[in-house]
Image (cartoon, rainbow, N blue to C red):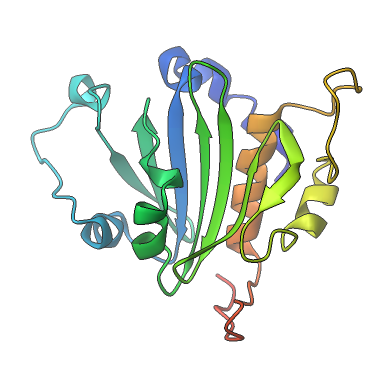
Amino acid sequence: MNADDYAWFDDHDESLAMAFCITFVRGVTPQEAFDRLGITADPEADIENFLDEGAVAASAVEGGAILIEPNGFAGIQESVTKPLSAGTVTASVFLNVNAHQHFVYAADGQVVTRFEPDYPGSRSGTDEDRLLAHMVELGMPTEDVDDDDEEWGDPIHTAFALAERVLEADVRLASGHDLGSM
């Protein structure tokens, strides 16, 4: 996967592409993800309800589940990443209408790497450099860039590709146990 594989996202649903939080969760079903967060699915929900504030949709994807929050941000908060990533890994990509962006990679209840996709050189977390090899492969700058620097690609599309890559890769946690590969 690379950033170009996500170019379709901008045209798929214009209102969603302007403000969202999308969280990839490895090795769980959508119901298991909801259970971890104490969310009760509404069997009567339809597409009209999906755009309501606080709505979360979940879908099964190869290797796990994906949670989609239109105009939401819960997936980047530690109160969500901690239970959702317990015993597994998550990667969340956030964008709001003010162009604030976040990428959060969590493993086994800890935020491992956090950064703004448009400034990936400024990272934090328990192992802020854990994703460097993937970032380099995707063409992300690993040091701070100035606004005057040459454009390196679409930060959000690249963050989606990074999220998918890290969830597919073998991930060794700081505690030393291996989650294995999907």
